[in-house]
Image 1 (cartoon, rainbow, N blue to C red):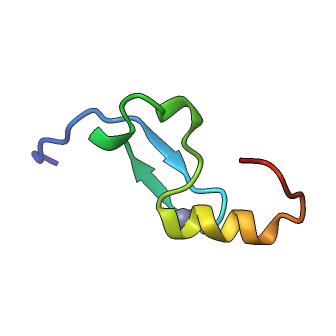
Image 2: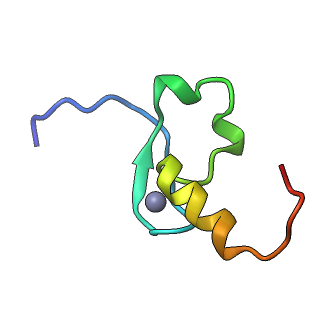
Image 3: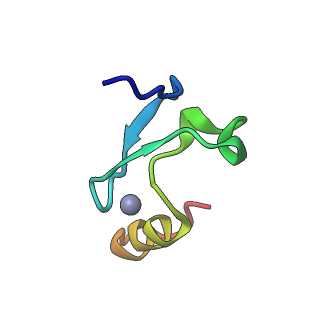
Length: 54
Ligand SMILES: [Zn+2]
């Protein structure tokens, strides 16, 4: 284990359940990020029946 890994925070996507690491594009919204990708985010919104939430 000599690989050097950056110490990035990791979360698990609420849709696909996969872990995903911090990305530059999330630096300002990381606390609110719940999905690994726009695709999953769309999935979550499509699955949720509650409209009007952004
Ligand atoms: Zn996902």
